Amino acid sequence: MSKSKPTPAELDLSDVEWVVSSFSGGGGDCVRVGLKDGFVLVGDTKNPARPPHIYTPSEAQAWLQGAKAGEFDFLLDL
Image (cartoon, rainbow, N blue to C red):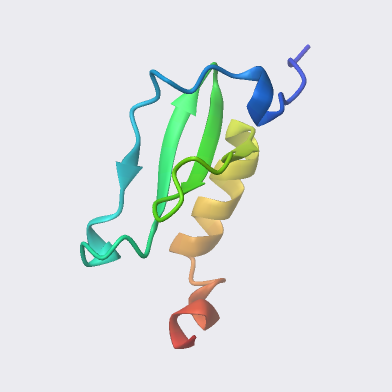
C-alpha cells in the first residue's frame, strides 16, 4: 500500500537538494525540483519560501514522459 501524499507543512524541507534547469538562463525564471521521502517536489525559484507542489513518482513520471513526447510543447510559445 502506498503512503498518502503529504502537505508541504508535513515535510521538513531543510535538507532537500534542489535542482534548477540549465535552461533557466540564470534569471531565476524557472522551477526547482527536489526529492523528499519518495515524493517529487516542484518549487518556485523566485519565491523559495513558497511551499512546493508535491507529486507522487508516478505523477511526475507521467508528466516527464508527456513532456519528452512533445505533449506540452505549446508552452514554449508563451
